[in-house]
Length: 493
Ligand SMILES: [Zn+2]
Figure (cartoon, rainbow, N blue to C red):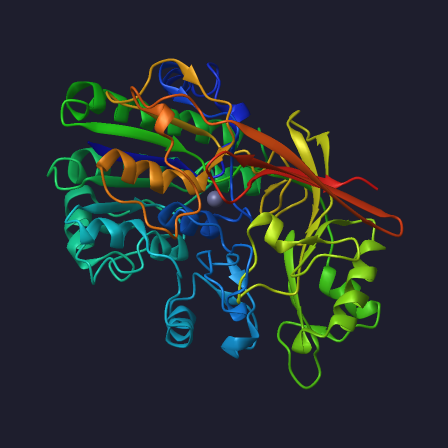
């Protein structure tokens, strides 16, 4: 058995329809569909990449400092601030130099073993094509060169692994087209490299193709905009080509297909500058803790705050300030309390966690194209009306997921909550490889022929309140899985 993992970054489930993506929609209907799949928190791309390759959330329920076994891959956000690193601001996981410095301090950037490492140990081959950012390419396989595995990134030979032979590909297919919105030429290029190069030599057991669309078009042109619809049409045509290969030769060679998105998106209605708001309120806020700053802010729609020496009184002051603001949505702290939810409840607690995770407020209203999900955001690069993700709104964390192949059931929909963390154990289950104890998800056995029925589950509503502030978060507990699946939440009052 082999797996092609085909990822459409940022794709919302409600766009996989007969009129927008007919080929992907047919695949979803013909095989196994998981409508209740969720991203991990925060629902930013590089956290999902790390969750895909490790089968883990960013954290678990116990910090390592308590001497207990620790869960979580430790990539806390696309950019995250950790005072331990001694940097003058957040660590950007696309900054190669900073990532190397962080590796030297942490020992391991990604705490849990990755799919690449696990497959290498059993002499199976893992191969990647990605049009995502540099950090996306790196996190899909941090050790591609060391393990002599193929990693092709559109960002050049320096980001690709040597065995992927970037220069040879450019020679064969021409230069990578310039990125634009919609990024159709790049999506088509990657599909050609997949079908006319990577899949031809038959060396991979698991092949990843990661498209950075419709994420880009949603972000900068809007969810449902003509540009995003063009991107979806192009991606569906790319998928049609993949299906043609699959029907002609792929299935005969044992290939199974997992199609996914890493998260969805909702629409930004207004910019809020949380750093400025904190400063106006009198907090000594900045990018890193130093002589003049005692509140470090990683600003974003899904933001993080770390205070000097984790001072409980200062944390409480910041929490009270946040809860007083109309733009503040969900709030989480390491221990919970004072109206916040514990990070442990959403699998986000470990040594690298900030003191506070906050998400700007979201609603179920619709954008100008009629698509639900609106929010405030602290991302100046995203225009008002553009798409955003990173939080826990139930629309934005509901990722697309469908599985097909000769060992997979036909025409089935499983409503059991599932998520990005289940992909790695499912691939290992299919390949007959032992699933590591660090995996926090489960193999989706019921998707396979003779794999039995889906497990039972129950939902749990978390509700916390303080003065003039009430928030609710829904999680699901699936029988046989220790860690809850995230179902979404919002500020109620
Ligand atoms: Zn993404």
